[in-house]
Length: 168
Image (cartoon, rainbow, N blue to C red; front, side, top):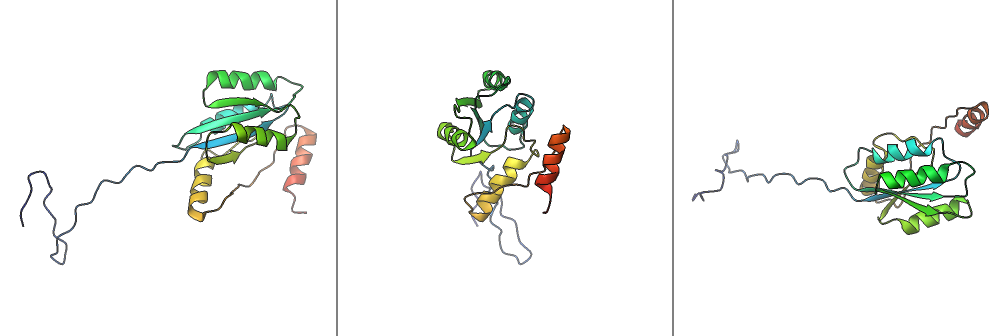
């Protein structure tokens, strides 16, 4: 067998046949994801929620589109500061304050084919987007979602969380 100067020597298999040299594995290319967040009166939670999205263990591009309703707290200012600090964060208006309108506005402003919906007070596991994209690709589904573990800080929020997680 003739050897070319730059090619590796073939290795013998147990049966004596020559093995084909393996090509190096190609790096996984992750598709870009737009995370849309309908936001209203989320001054207390928005910063941390956005930071958790941007810190996802996901190697593809991520953008966060915040659709801000007419909040009665400093949500707009928090959102504007987040957008000023990171070009991956985009702020759009949601004058009605209604969730469907917010989602439509955020989706219209998003640049990517994969859309993840996250609430303005959500705390995500670090691999949430990775698992969601892997599941989309593995199943061919149009939509996937996770389980919400409701929590609260005030007595009212604790009651709502218990009601939301009740099996009844």
